[in-house]
Amino acid sequence: MSNIVVVGTQWGDEGKGRVIDLLTRRVGAVVRYQGGSNAGHTVVVNGQRFVFHLIPSGILHRGKKCIIGSGVVVDPEVLLKEIEDLQKRGIIVNELYLSESAHVVMPYHKQVEEWEENQRGKLRIGTTKRGIGPAYTDKIARRGIRISDLLIKEALRKKLIINLNFYKKLYGIDFSIDELTSKYLSYGEKLKDYITDTSLLIYQLMRKGEDILFEGAQGTLLDVDYGTYPYVTSSNCIAGGACTGVGIGPGKITEVLGVAKAYTTRVGKGPFPTEIKGEIADALRERGKEYGATTGRPRRCGWFDGVILRYAARINGLNKIILTKLDVLDKLNKVKICTAYRYKGKIIRNFPAQESIWKESEPIYKELKGWEKDTSKITSFKELPQAARDYLKRVEEIGEVPIYLLSVGPQREDILAMNS
Image (cartoon, rainbow, N blue to C red; front, side, top):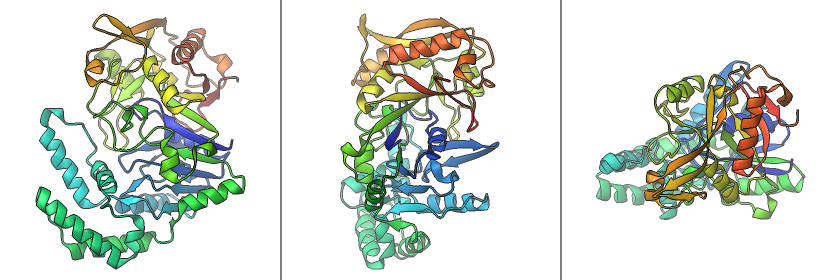
């Protein structure tokens, strides 16, 4: 398998966690390269549901190294709770590695994010209010606190003095320096056995010939540079983010796999050209259990968007895609795929950069016959109804990227190879 990046091709929630879980058995390590506890990757194994916010989704496989890279912003309290919850469920967490260079999400970041969202009013972005954006702001402003600072009292206290003075003057936010210093040093003490130079660790694994999976959080359309800005997250979710997020050169990446739902969903505010409302949207939401893994918010649902897939294929350099949740469409007598947008009478095939165009664009659809048969029990591609095969073929043609794997249910084993 070599070194493979797995990336979301839509607005997140495509099913990356279960794909990573499936592919982990074939690699030596799984590396999370960006995002924070605003992400939620869900894996279902033997009827048990696991939701990961910071720990890589490969943690359920024994003997696999799970690495949190420097591009991730880490809330130590969330990470420690994840570790504790896994241990309570009988999962051994002895191959977890945390980058000493990763930045820390602090309590004042959460307060700032809530304040900023309230200030936006009707123009609010719809963040998770987990402090992710402000943590990345501090990183770029060169005042961030890193994981390694949690191990040295003088370094942590010095940075806290600077930051707390700044946030008190700007936002009126006030915390006790002594209390925060003590609390976060205690987090550092609990995490110290996991902390290491992860870039060096990954380099050494590559030198040994280990296959590695790089796990992205969120999705292409939430990338801070290439997503539907400003309705985006604060990091680079695309495949290129793996290089900066873990400290490897682009020549080390051998393949990029995209994950897409057989329809489209979005959480939070922002444009969504193929969004549908009413009975069909409600049916998709209920059948697909479309509620945020992190926030529990209901996801907006829409038809498959081929414009977005073409864009994701180009931006990420996708080699193949894994299509998830085909079974959610089983009961529909008609299904649609967006092939292009219409904006002020002009047909647009490429995803536009301007917010005004997204908002005013109308989707142009290719309508296909639904298969109206249960696909959740199917074990090979050849068993799929012809109408479902036709749908998959059109997705490949319109998206201009081949489908590699197909999921027809939530369980680990409910995935089909397209040549089966």
